[in-house]
Length: 349
Image (cartoon, rainbow, N blue to C red; front, side, top):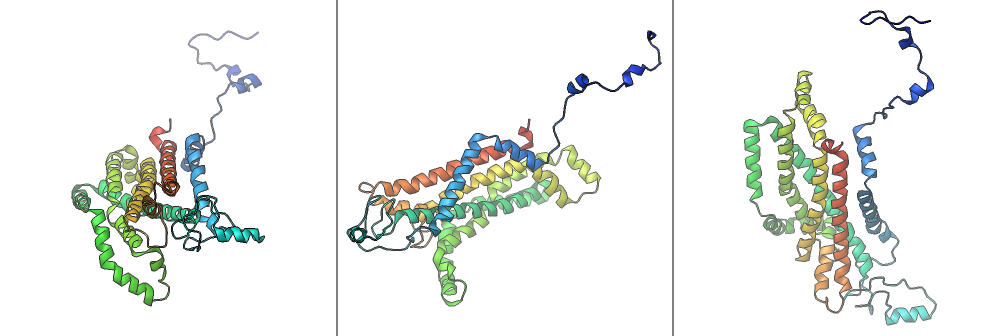
């Protein structure tokens, strides 16, 4: 018979050290296995059905723009005589005669334009141009804006004041005017370089206008990203983990890269993904007014511009690039929202 333990006694109870039975083991709370920041963010992103659907749409559009043109029987600059202004899935008289002779003729899925060029392949190449412009521009904005804004916010004081005054000056520069001035200034040097120096013929393919657009993106479009990152860094640098990193002897570059920018990941991702549709809009607008890509290279903006003249007779020529632009922009916006919810530490719980 076990002795009753006296109150306020310092004697240990042997029963407290007995092995736990199966029922007690099942009642224990099992903690989830520790995962890294990126793995946890990707797991949370995969649970967002809207964002995953948008990602699938973007992947389908990329396959449509980058892979299908390799298997399509027509090229974007090919002009088919006698096949001008065909309706979707319509054949010309010459093509009908070839079909009657037993030859196989691939249909014009979206018809042809006034020059006899297949609209479907031009939509593919136009989507490729717009996606490349958006992605390259967003990468440039991310690299320049995050670096500039983090330096200004981290060091503060006179460094911050001087750097932000430069940003204010850049804000006042009209981007469209700079693109036009660059086109006028660089048109002859770049064209002579493309015609006289081997290996630079790609300049004539994409056009001087598109090169000037990328230059302006690098010079002007990063200021919004820099302001956003600076405001985040000004708040985060006062946190305890930054003070602890400084006490442990971490360098300024490591603190900015490993501690501050990591906690700005949600803002970086959202701002970058929103920059993609903004860049696509800018390129489409400039191509619409004739400043973007060089003919015969198509873009969604130039296709819409060419379709305006026959909007009453051939409305599908305008609907095709308009729907493609809408899908790309909406999908990137929804992906950005999903990535923000998944990777922002403040929204983790």
